[in-house]
Length: 341
Image (cartoon, rainbow, N blue to C red):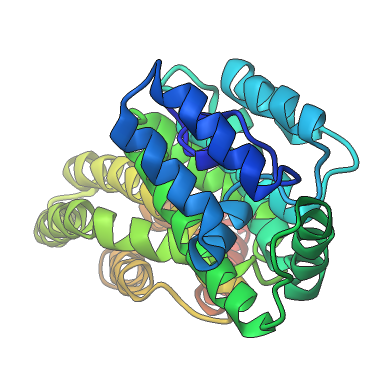
């Protein structure tokens, strides 16, 4: 069950515009059919002014009762369809989107999941405590519950909502196969930053930071494997390009594997004006090999291969990419000069 289905409003079949008496009557009816403890807690949550605010902000404030029931059913039945529902208040739409994410399973396409996560990040940035306070108090004016006057109470609840959204999304991502998870993170970051060109919403940055921690062990292991191959390529270079090529091919493969995992981190950091240090360090080590193969062994073809791989794998590291492009120009000019001479 999603959080919306577990809401006190859903448990009692109540709306945000029902009076205290109506809530009590509904609780008495429901307690004859369902667990009395659950029903009584739902009643207390909706009749206590402080806990009621938490329940209201986790529901669909500003949405008419009948429409709210329809939307909750839609979010749980056709999870992704709720994304395009028009004309909803921002908080209500967010609660529906996050319920949709919670209801998805591993079969959900990466593109759809990325689209919804991006939507949550974007809409979370647009949340306005004043708008939410207005929607809540309009419903309370009908239900007869006291008006909420403290704006800071709404702000605190919205902070809790944002934390809850991140938790639900992380749990949903954890259920995905690793390949799908990487695709979802990459697509989400690319959408949110326009390919690294602008800052992402804070929620997306938080997700990337969590992803970085979770992938650190894998990336560290891959870096160690590449370092061993770099050492082997240097040691074999004196024997000619046949032996060294074997190690260069493996370095290319592992570098592409690395960047497949690290790409969302690289793009996110680029949008924040940062460099992903592990990627940066690894890129410079591979570049040093490419230069050494040329300067010390005149293996121009292998140096060009490694440089092309670096531009493909680490192109989102702005300063490094500029340097690698200069290397590529030098190697190209050398090859052309030799071909013409």
